Image 1 (spheres, helix red, strand yellow):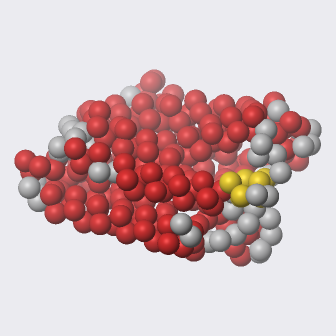
Image 2 (image 1 turned 180 degrees about the horizontal axis):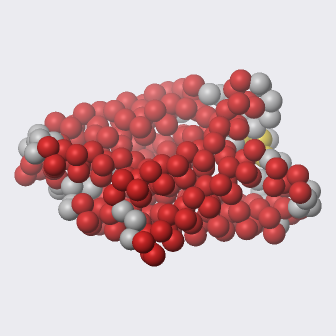
Length: 272
């Protein structure tokens, strides 16, 4: 199937499913049924096929901005779908699925080329997988924190909301920190593997210049922010607004580490 057709079809399925879930959310007895998460299987499979066609080319792995954003979206939704069954987060489908639809269109809208010559190395693939899982988990954490803040605001204002089908805020808060903790471990693995195996991964030995690169500086900053958040949670019991601010700050730094630098270089400056 041609790339444009696959992108548009996947986005339409995500959008249609978002509309369907929003319609069901108006019926409290239906909104939290686990079966809703099973409906994600088809668009997720199509999105996976889209990424396979876009990324794995004859020249090697193409990880331009469009493919990177789409891959992060797909991994995020995959993890979210698995989590939603366990923690009954189906009320978030109308919020998450439009974002997934946008992600499915990224390879079509940003058709940039950035082929990785070392994409076939097993060590790089492990580094790559850890990095994308970390990005996905921190994306979920950011969205999760924003939804918690909105749900708490609506609760205090005693306003009816489609988010009323969510688990209790304390349960969501525990889940938030579990997600952040897992993401922090994966981000640590990503940074450590990049430093320890720089020559094998990127074809050049580790040097001071590595630590002054845009993406390295922001990745390390994100690691420090999330580390401080987890430490603050353990020692001082940080929660609520404080935890949300730190979580969003860490996510912003992580976003700038890769997506920001790639967008500036490839989309604005047209450089690889």
